[in-house]
Image (cartoon, rainbow, N blue to C red):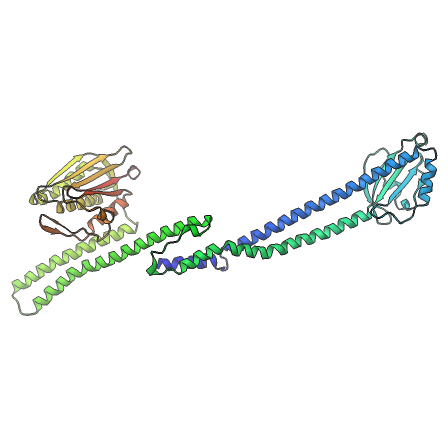
Length: 484
């Protein structure tokens, strides 16, 4: 059932695009597209402004060069005549790649002394004021854009007459080039978008391929293949933690399934034995007419079987409540040596009959539920007595630890437990069938499971040490955090 849920989660919850579902593929594609389009756009905008800056710089340099040429020309004795003749012979045809330059020289009164034909589209008032050093971009009366300046003249004749020069460059070709570049860069941005869409599909498909392979592998796992494990080295580094987590989960699931199968089989066996005994006794009693005393013997035997069934059911119900994590503990400060003394006193008669000595050593204080603590300790003492031969010793030792926790050890001098049994010693219905003093000692395998459940409820630990021929020690460790 858990495997089926895991499959549905991986295939539907992540990989299948459901309405409102989180989609890794969609997010990766969108991030990839946005990144590429943003990169193309930033490059296009940066390139556009650099082109505009270079064109403006070129126009300014050409303007300054023309100003220097005219100033040099006016230093000549007949410079004004040469300049006037050049302007009168000016035509619309210009050298390819060169801007059209318009010049006007004004006297003190603002009247034009020399001017070219096309400058009439630029009134004198549109130029910067005299003495203001700035470059101005305006549109003339003919609708064309111009870059203009109002500059002083340095030759003696111009300074003596108070002349100044207005000069402008036609930026029509400049604007045409800018518009052309702008169009190309917009197309460049759209090209980036068109490039991003198919590449995002390829990137997403390639990037999610390991995840799809993982999903396909998990989908092939059945209930009979819980031993399947994935090799992290076959997946990208980013997915290796996921694969390791999956393998850990499969270990847990496999262990849970094995314990559940073992638990179910043992439960059926434990319940079948007393029920079969009851059925057999009843059938024998009903096979012929019997005396009242015989029927009473059958009923007395049945009561023993019912008692065994009741004990098993009571222990199973306790473990079920412990598993539900809905336990109403009543923790209180307990003197461990006092509680242990009362438990030992309870088992003293049984131990005396078995020829076993009971001991209690040490002292300590814990915070625990008195009833549950006594039950756990009673289970351990009873189990130790049943596995200790005549003349042996069962001892309860209380050992406060440096970290504030308290250990309660229950030790016996019995036959001990083989190391292979220790990891499963606290599993439900797990039994180590042994003979003590020539008699078989067989329980139902729930006593130590209940001890572990009680310690889990108290957030403590239960540990086991054993040595063949020397005995076994079970430790109840109540942590400091649990006591606070």
